[in-house]
Image 1 (cartoon, rainbow, N blue to C red):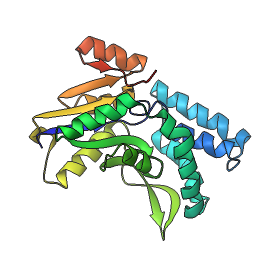
Image 2: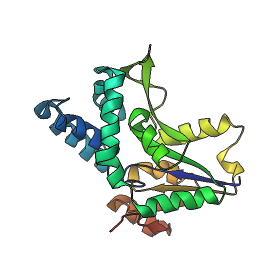
Image 3: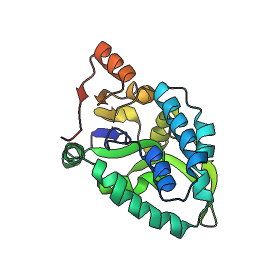
Image 4: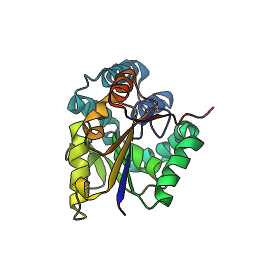
Length: 223
């Protein structure tokens, strides 16, 4: 296993932002009040795209619904969320990319800022068993609304990848090739750490960096 392949999730392997869509799903289901939640959810998403998001402020907002509801209700809602919002956003090109790297024997992981409750089943839908995500804290089986450990965002993605590899007695430098696929300029810290950064349907800022540095760019969108 001489190659490491890392995949961002939102707007990379899937054609939507699962964090944003989960909030909107709960609004549409009547779990969250539309007037109180929808505008703030959209505002945070715009801050993310602009690169101005305060991740700790956002997580205080995004993790609150997990703390306010019973785990069995959350699991039931998430199953519907997967069926109606996520599976339609997974295209054949993305599945084929993941499968190609797995078939080559690469060590593969999904590395995402979105919390592991939302993204765990999505990573499994791709057959990727290693997930590095922001971890919501649990106490006695229930979410608290707080973060456990380092948010998997910007430089935090590097810290989480390095800690995950260290637990296996490995380092990024041990791999003959390390790849990271992402759509977002927010992922530039990790893109700059791997030997093969790949821009996937990139946002304008990342597209400009990729062109300037000669990074490959691909599209995983389906017709």
